[in-house]
Image 1: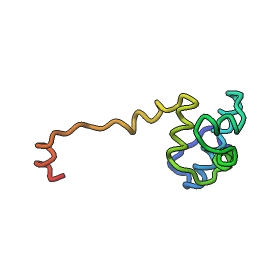
Image 2: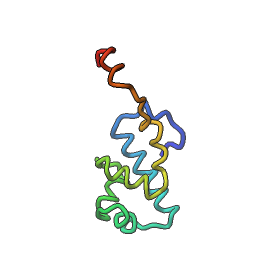
Image 3: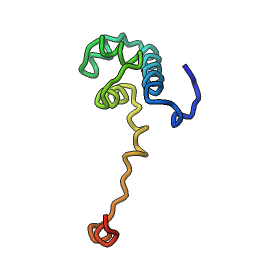
Length: 94
């Protein structure tokens, strides 16, 4: 697993593998089994194994995992939305 990288240049499959590896590390550091994590996010131990191996997963499980490990605040930047008045939107043609 690569420790420092520019995530923008990874293919989606490689991103999932890296994310899964990070999940596994965080899970072990927290002293959780795959079953413990599965119970926390409402899935199965098999699904956690798949996530840790970089298999395709849904965004809902990614968000739930981030919450378990108190990493959800890392999404703050992409969740920021500039508020535009309806009048400005109309005038700009959006």
